[in-house]
Length: 128
Image 1 (tube, one colour):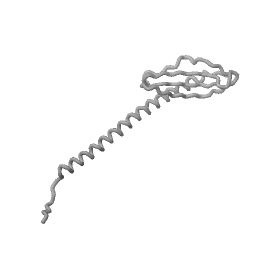
Image 2 (cartoon, rainbow, N blue to C red):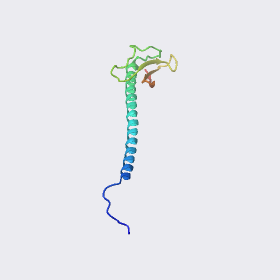
Image 3 (cartoon, helix red, strand yellow):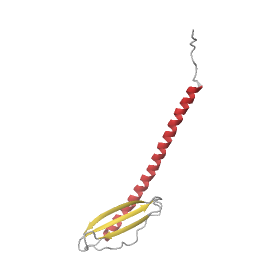
Image 4 (cartoon, helix red, strand yellow):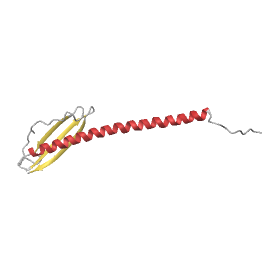
């Protein structure tokens, strides 16, 4: 006959399988966590850049004239030193998309930032 004694504890094979499955879950979780952290950093930088570009757009919009004239905005736009954006540059252009006799001017702000250059563009049309 077979001796059916009550088993106490786990076998070494059962423990190794459990540890392997647990390690697989931890490794997968770490990879997902890394991607989420990286994406949130990119989103934060994009939001900062967009906010700076929009604030600059609002600052330079009053320089648009009627009838439209293409002008170089003054003072030269700058990016705040505490922005946290690396390799950032900003440019503002005021142009006449419908000709110089039109009362409509286009104000466009282009901000580039990051080690791999990314670009944010905000524009508005101003009619006086």
